[in-house]
Image (cartoon, rainbow, N blue to C red):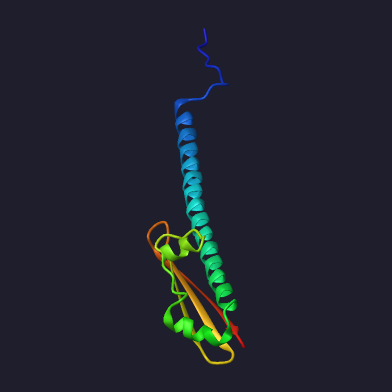
Length: 133
């Protein structure tokens, strides 16, 4: 009698190779997913920071032109996280804004927003505009 094995089954080395390929593929997908979450958080923080800078610029635009330079030099719009929250905004981790101006007419206004990212890295974004009176 012939001892014939069926040809439609998998051998142990084939199963081990398949399991290794599958585990490698799943680990790549998992790393990609985790990186996507971190990038999404960084993007959301950047969008929030630019939104806060625009909010500060709108406050500056709603001020009379003659008092803008005085308010900038006195630190009226230099906000920390608690001041940002008191304005009805959601502050980022360790967020602060700093406003500077130069020139006379037009007045060049710069709003710098800084915060700490999810991993603790210090990030900042600068928004500039010119205001004439």
